[in-house]
Length: 151
Image 1 (cartoon, rainbow, N blue to C red):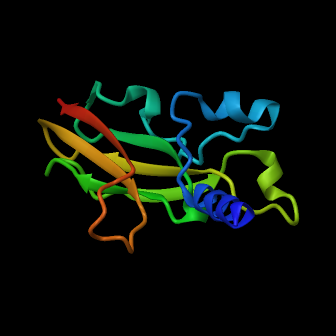
Image 2 (cartoon, rainbow, N blue to C red; image 1 turned 135 degrees about the horizontal axis):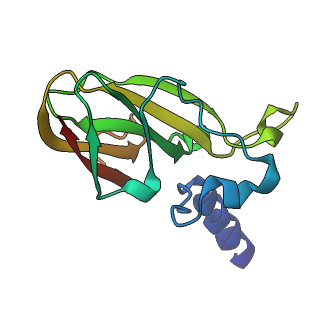
């Protein structure tokens, strides 16, 4: 009976999202780290370290929000709220480590990149939530929010 309870507890723990937000992906992965797949023409790269901050972008300027998600467990970042002066996000994703490119590698964290353009002047909150999209009634497991000031 104890063995069955232990197996069930381990199975549930394996389904939980990773909560490693305090450590950067480079620190987690060491020298095998892969940078976020961010277009070269963005003016500013916004990361998890910028959560809660104010970012300034020029009108017409593009910026990228680079977050690490766990899509292999179903947890993906989604735009929950954005100011009207920001374009809809262009999204891309990619490996966070070189090992993920090797045959037979499964699971792991992945980059999720959202690129926005400030189409006019304004100030407002950009909020992203990490969740399993099919769990509509569940709140996000993690949130990310910045105030965007476009001038």
